[in-house]
Length: 334
Image (cartoon, rainbow, N blue to C red; front, side, top):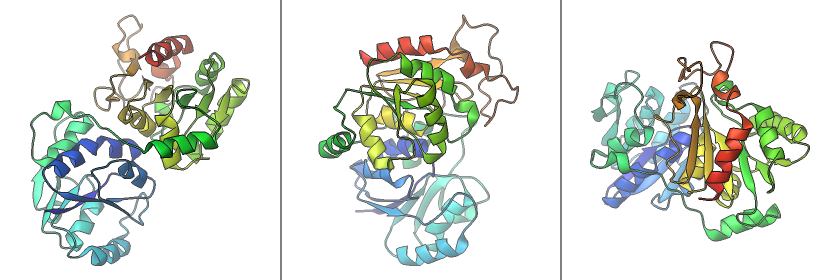
């Protein structure tokens, strides 16, 4: 059996989209260990094909060479192959230093010598699930790959009990987006949407999202509960998995909801559902770029910028709460 180390991306949404790759590797007999930073590790603990998760002591930014060399010494001789999912030089450094014989990844950041099996990066922005799955070397059926996460029923029920909730008896809104403001539907819109719901609304996200979530609570007249930054990621997963439906920006939690098959409304503006869609048959995707009735057309979208370069943020500001409420109602019936 091939002992395989997978170097995970550092973003939650990207991590979710790697699940079909890991399923492919496991199906052909590879024994999988995933190396991931702590804030991404819970994603891989929700993948039954992963045998073990090693939490890396790394942070965003910086080479952190000494820390990588120390960890490489601990991993020396433990693996036969490594798949390097991020395109950075530093992510390929650890398998190289650990002397793993087979090291697979895409070309990028002058790391040719660090990889033994190299794929060329595709042009443009291809669907990310297929991008990761192609690293398996098997290109058959890439377009059918759909991420799936699993949690034990006891984990879901335990998290709900702590919050005094029942399965399907509440909604989740995820108003944050780690990438930047250009991905965020306005908080006033979220507040208006929450105020019109019959079911309780939970606001989930990181500690960075807590001020926005609190503003939504206040503007909605207390019709939402702010849990942003007050749950661990594993608990947030359980709350999403037990929800009746979820509304979110294009974010990591959007992909989590999709991977659990939760009915959802996904709001796109500066980014594109052609690149990172929620792969969920119960998803309602709203993107004004694709609406022929919306005038003037959004020729600027998708810009993929952290902040609106034109200063108007029309792509999300003009996506009104009434339209999202209608999509939420449709998703909740699916």
